[in-house]
Length: 273
Image (tube, rainbow, N blue to C red; front, top):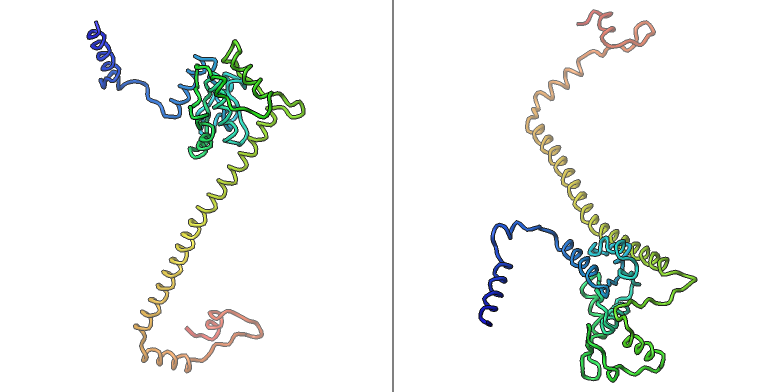
């Protein structure tokens, strides 16, 4: 019986990792689209799954991983957070300890190192996550008793997967605050892009100036070579003969009967060819 099951599992695994033409003709997609599709499937499959991070909702994520998910699942499943990686990393760890399944998105990998403090061992034992209950003896004592009461309420609730929303601030709603933070982040990204563009254009303009100087240098070299060729073709005898001809030549009058006329008309009047 065990042998037949092993053979069946091996054959199914072999079929799953087949490299036949039929398997290779499967749908191809980018890593971004694959992550988006996987998140969509998990959000639809399990109500306890939710996404949180910077600009993951209205802006569709910094790298468009969560594109379209906010419009489909709403504010309670796709949550925009302020620009504080340690804060929403702690929220994600606490939600996982309470039985939820958070997907925490960081803009860059080095920001995820903020979650190291939350993943430390509690009293020598790593805190459980997922569906396993958290023993009350492992909870760190807090100076405020209200925190313990809130944690106990979370652990003894009937619906563990229910998302706990923070209290609404009537003076400044969450959507307005999220929109303000998105505007601030976009301005910072725009400044960063302009800085990179200026740095790039600095080298581009240096190349333009270099090409301009090269053109000037080539024009100067061409002019100098023309002067050298003219100097090589210079004849002293011809130069002296030309000067003597100009000295012996009678200059034409510029005026004829009180009127200034062109040189060819004056030559016609004087009968000079």
